Image 1 (cartoon, rainbow, N blue to C red):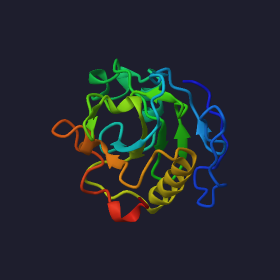
Image 2: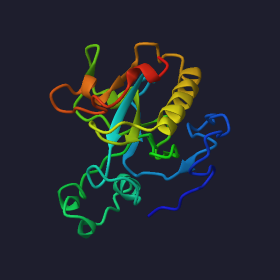
Image 3: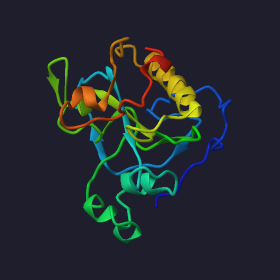
Image 4: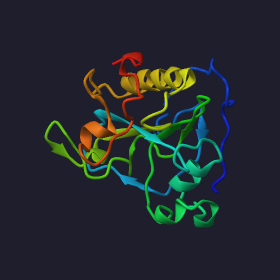
Length: 195
């Protein structure tokens, strides 16, 4: 697995204010660079945030498997579920774990491979103009207070840095990939985020 640059403690609810540098990286979070990204199309403004949910193995938390998955280093022998997904090449810009730890995998200036076939307000290929945030969780289990705290901090930072992200431009994966995806699911409390 690629080395992690540790900038914040896993349970730090009073994390330093999030700031984005000129290369699209957060300054105060863990960084693990994923190879699963590429350049955004020319002149594509960042104007959408997509919230996802992920757990590996399904409904289990911790273990570092999500980080391995986003870096193409998931061991197919580690769990019966992994052979079906270990050759997929996906990523997100950020992951927020159950304890609130934020890890960034892809610069916000680059295109992470998180949305797949998708459409928002008539525009196809949402990866081109969106930021993907994964929450460690499932459609059925409540997300943690620490996750909502960190998600709100991250959303505020992103909206301040990328003014094309408007109030109605924060959505779930299910909203842009209807019929194909269900996350973050009914367990996600939209009233707890600022949008």
